[in-house]
Length: 99
Image 1 (cartoon, rainbow, N blue to C red):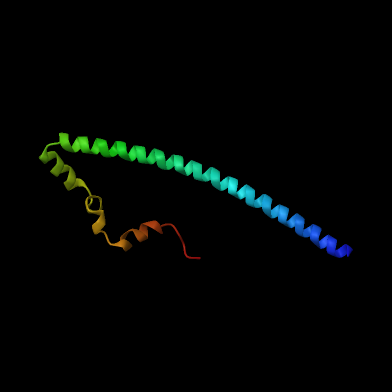
Image 2 (cartoon, rainbow, N blue to C red; image 1 turned 45 degrees about the vertical axis):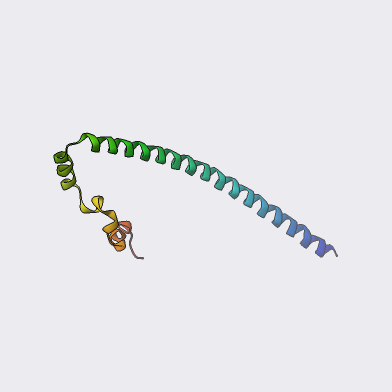
């Protein structure tokens, strides 16, 4: 009977520890989510500002200026949807060694 009570006490301690870890992890995840939400908000605002600036610059530029500028851009910047999906893979894996 005493060993059964001891097992129950140990199980309760384990459950309490697991609850503590779970609560700590949930708190940490919530904090990280809030930070990421704020970063997303800032990036969306920056993207919107840059799109407005880009639109304004396009309207103010002459056709010759636009043509000259576009001729200097790499093809993947002008038509990113035409790139093959595997084209970016080597850049993502650079510096990684197979061990």
